[in-house]
Length: 487
Figure 1 (cartoon, rainbow, N blue to C red):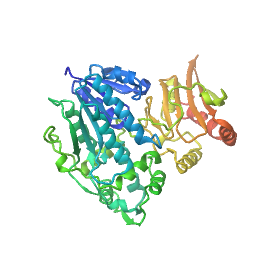
Figure 2: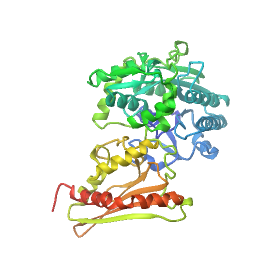
Figure 3: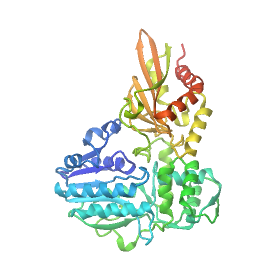
Figure 4: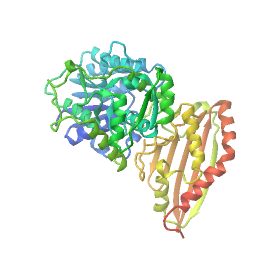
């Protein structure tokens, strides 16, 4: 199709899947991303035009919006901490203004259902962002969804882990509130159809699946689909989303920075309003809306078969102080601590590389897993991401993947893998593996680097230094020794 489409948030959960669908539909697609390297390994990378820049930069937006007919606004500042609502509002206003200057015909925005008079800060910020987009005068179709059910979505991971880990669950009062879940495939259907509107459309439209029930009922239904025994949910007179956020942070892989705003939203009745139906402009999927049970089945199948296309953790907010480079941060005083281990082996380089690429997740960390688990637990206690994020695929990695409490920052097959730490730290940490081969000998260089921030950073390094031999030396040895062809 000759209609040029811009997708923001292309490294995120919904955006990454939408780009794939739009490319398959034959659209000319452009994406705006903060860091192009995060698209390495994405199958559609060579089929789109990539603009590298930040959505808070008017110059980057001007370049990205030039010649665009329809712009998808899928940006979210949920995990940027305090002040995220104002950040979202300002960012949306700038986007709308630049879209008007570029003569964009249509903006499509994915927000959250917000029909209660009293709204959570999260839902209110979503609504304000939509209003800010529309103020500039570009036709803005705001599609509002509730809980999105799909492999890798934050809402699904919360539901999944709460249900599977807690057969008996003391639950706050919000589990009795009604929700209106929708399958990710149906969300993508509505978004993809919005790219094909014959004329621009403005307005707020709610989208939801065929089922409406309470969060507690949703947990019971999930348990049945997953083949679990019936869950016992005991309502308790606690209504504090802050306290619940800490609890969810400990039980699920979703960190408190994301889980808490989502829980705040559950205080509201999140049900689509029939008066805001989008059916006048977009029909339902040809095979009908996906039932909750079928959506769960598909999500579990994708997770089991390692076919999760995108995950909630793909998009990064401010989980770490550095996202682009291993150069010394300006506040580090140019000091760095390093733990370097070098191992040699007669095993082929491709076998050792395969062992490196399998690290983390269900595969573990090649020894001392109890120590990694303890560090992950401590990280969860203090509000970090912990180890439960796991990995997207058990065998292969790509740049931008979350890997337990690390993120893949650089990857060159059979040459280098560099991980950036996203656990709570008084500084910035990297873990890098490098391979080389000469005269039939493969050399593995494993380097852990820590850039301390202030006195606390220095104290932290020396506090954990005694454990490095146990952890890092064991890991390097076991990576080399785990290969299939021992010599």
